[in-house]
Length: 113
Length: 116
Image (tube, rainbow over all chains, first blue to last red; front, side, top):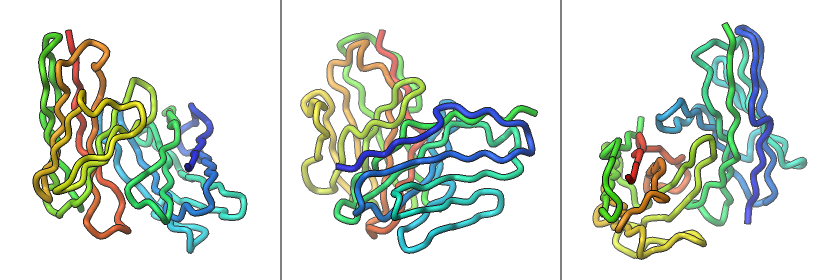
């Protein structure tokens, strides 16, 4: 099955700096990669996703890049703000099982004002 | 956007009680819903996949007689934690996926279950 690894587990940045969270996956059949943001005690919310037919996707201050050859994808947050502080999860889904999302272990992002 | 409603948000009860958690997709039809368990500071652990009109598919190590799942309609799935014990205390989150397979999962608000 698929195995998703996520790094770092914690990340502290100064407000205004950029933050990068990286994930790797093992199954070359994975073709959909969403990123979720979870604030303490709340639901994970989809913030951006990317499919395997593109290498990069951007939405305002958030971008995701995908390297299929190396089997890794990254979340980039620019001009970080205190409200970006949360736990971020990457996930992968294979083309042969739409029902199963494999989640990374999470990254706790702390943006210091 | 897609909305998933989960109730109750918090349950505190005595050991031995059975607890039912509801997950509803409010503005879309979900042939498949998912139940996750999340321990503090850890990732989401998939417990089972709930299929409308058929039996749920449980992940390895998850007791199906302990965690009963019913998905009777395209908008409602329920998880019943039977005879709950303190070790069942956790954050339970459901998610639902639109019937079209290329859509992402949308999560409910979660249920914090505390067994005394």
